[in-house]
Amino acid sequence: MSRMTGKPMRERPLLRAFMRFPIYLYRARLGWLFGERFLMLSHTGRKSGIKRYVVLEVVNQDEENKIYYVAAAWGEKADWFQNILVTPEVTVQVKNRQYAAYAEKISPEAALENLWAYARKYPAAFTQLIKTILGESLPPDYETCQKMAEAIPLVALKTNIPA
Image 1 (cartoon, rainbow, N blue to C red):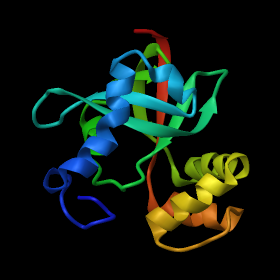
Image 2 (image 1 turned 135 degrees about the horizontal axis):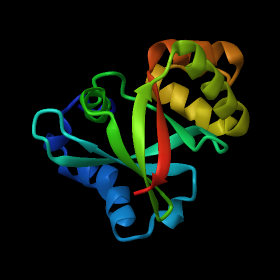
Image 3 (image 1 turned 180 degrees about the vertical axis):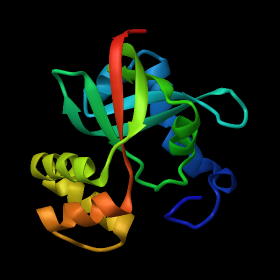
């Protein structure tokens, strides 16, 4: 379902096409347009077993250990989040580089640390994210990050060698 309209995405074909457009750019080897702020996650459908794709914003990154942190902004019911709980072996594409990765939900405490880093780095984007997810206009401060860490799950995408 779309949070904006309350209708399933399949009933809103233009919205669905708009939301999926970045996937086509990544698949056309144009992922470099998004820099390292976004990534494409390839995951396996929990029911179908079919490869699925979603483009996600990187909340934080541990460059030394090659870990990307992403948020399930639509909550634990997001299809990609449900899929990685069943099959955590995924592929991550950043720019035009692909990595095999292991997806793991992180603790609320670790989520808080990563959200706080995001809020400090991108305060305007964080403020908009809060408004979209929580439906409130809140400042990009530590207290707001605590609310977010309790409201949405964060996932660590632990990459290893290029796929």
